[in-house]
Image (tube, rainbow, N blue to C red):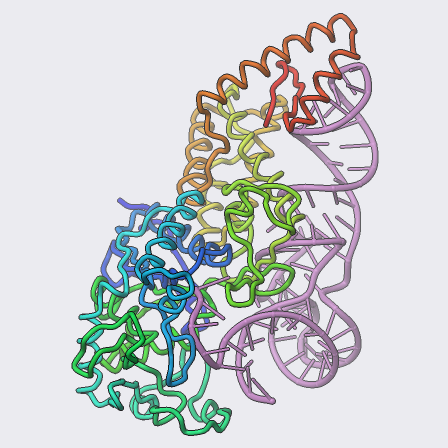
Length: 492
RNA sequence: GACAAGGUGGCUGAAUGGUUAAGGUGGCGGACUGCAAAUCCGUUCUUUAUGAGUUCGAAUCUCAUCCUUGUCUCCA
């Protein structure tokens, strides 16, 4: 018996605009595809939020007992810089600027991406395919679309015929656009384009002689269009129809719209059952994006090396901060917000160790079973992590009351409570306890313990000048002493 | 300009027709302390951008106004 048989999950489907009861195509199995990064620069924090949302979703689906195949691609072929005739590959451009081979750029930023995600404690996806590794599959899809009559070739490039497609299907249904409106709103441009209509998009683009990234094809040397790789890779690994397709809100149009069109043109039916879109992370009220320069790198948060933050924040604090907002809401990053999250996060973590040392009694003043189900209810309601976290703090409150002797808990309930908290905090939210203990840390803590002992002696002798000196100077070094009933502890 | 999503307390952020608007953080009071800090307990602040309407009842539905953000070109 798997958990999912008892828990009814509902997911907000961007396509229908409603929360729908989730039922996988194949009992017990889920196929999920998420649009990954374009690896032409360091991954920024906004990207991380989207991937983190889906990491949490992946974790919860697994927790429910589903077998999930999670595919997240790496876009290493680049997209066009612009739509003009001299359209150039983003990655190729970067390569020239830095005097690097294109694949050298790809390698560098793929490593950076993995490195950052690892610090954030992401689970690796089941498959992480690359666009350049699937050129053949993309060419096959283009051939198929051409055969079905939804694309045309011009001067070595192939374009998707949106108008033709719209005659039999509905282009724009995901983003709520109508083709007629789009055409009406199109500015009149000089006809320097091979495309029949501005709405058409490239499936294959001819490579000019100076273009470095190029592959042979039935239409000559070139490179695949912007939206094709996701269709090729999702279909290859998850099938013509699969359960969940996710990505950032900004990909809804045109990227996902085009994916739908490509798949429908090819296979005659909609490729995805549940479309999920994670919302943007803003900073100073503006969208974070590489292109506008309004962004912060994760590494800059971990080190505190930036202008907008007063200090460094650990990856788990940032993760906790993000989990406190629903994935479909815009979240605004600020120093105050991170400080508040850090405080709350450490209170949550502290309560876990308090729980371990708790004595048990004959009765419980806290209905652990009901509380546990409330946690599941929150997650079942479209992965509502902020509500889940509110419930976790409800438990924190009871743990502290029990510690104070104002409430009690049975041994069985204590066990359930501990297991449930661990499952939600570590397995599902993906948080980690801070601070690894290395050899040096061991030595340091030995030194601090010594100082604590000296301070204790000074205090017993009422030599407060000495005791305060130890306390205050350690504080200046960033080491805080905490006096409690059972002695003094410290945090760095 | 077209389309879309929003405007909730000092900050952050849930709740979309039904008793006291969740939680975190901050403020205040208390416990603890030699004093602080840390920790814990309690409590407080909003009437949900503005105005009008629908309803027995609205943050939640409708209309208008103001404002913000996003998409329409690559973007998580």
